[in-house]
Length: 379
Image (cartoon, rainbow, N blue to C red; front, side, top):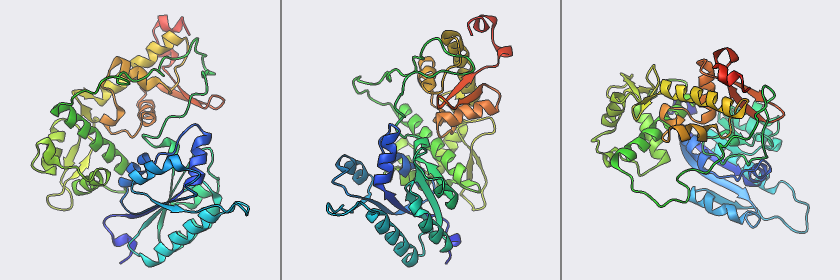
């Protein structure tokens, strides 16, 4: 049986922890494996999970990896020798051994930005294995991404810790007069825990389903079947059961979501296994439509342009939307992250967005011809 005969991808995860941990630290992040595991759950079933490092140097990171069921491979550094690629070599040997002895493993995930892994990637692809690379945007060698079938920048993953603030940003189009107040703490921070109702639990489930469906659509070549969607949900949370939400089966849950306008079901190639997609007009959640979410974005951008006297930056903008609509989340409409939601808004001519290289920041704005006079007077 070849890897292409399988109905579900089998993945092997190998993490060069020292490389990604230091790379994350350099851009103000801390490497947390959870967002990566969520992204991989949408791509297939993880068979092997290993991370390589001298763990005496990364003691604080061990707990999070163990909680993610990652096997920690100890590679001690000898004090009487120059630090060399001991972890890289062991990782490459283990990956090749698995590729040669476990034909059913179809995809290898190499987490590192080191160009030293380029020969390993090439050899795995010669063995008809798919290779997904993962690294940090600023510290990944330019040689590595082109050699992979797919490359994921960790700092772009939904749920990855935010980049630490380096101070105020200025737009070259129109400089803000003051900093945005979007960096305020969440209203839930420091407050006492609250009880969740059945409706809140169901809304949270809807969000997980739309987020998972969106992630699967971004990596799959064809339609998403209901059975594959449920398998992806179980990979994210093995305790998931639709019965906990009052539904007798997964299709009954999907029919409910279809009635709410969250998803669209069509007859699939397999009897009793419909294909799942988003409605043509966009998903709805809690009575709000995708168009209403875009309208909220446009209104917020215009208000901030007037308040700041310039274009508001992307960072902090989501918090501004939540100040106006506390339940806002782009995930309710199937978007994997807020940047993706904003790019969709640009495509639909809701707002415009420019990247400022000097600031390393996106700025959003509404064209002058569409602005009220009172806003134009201030910018």
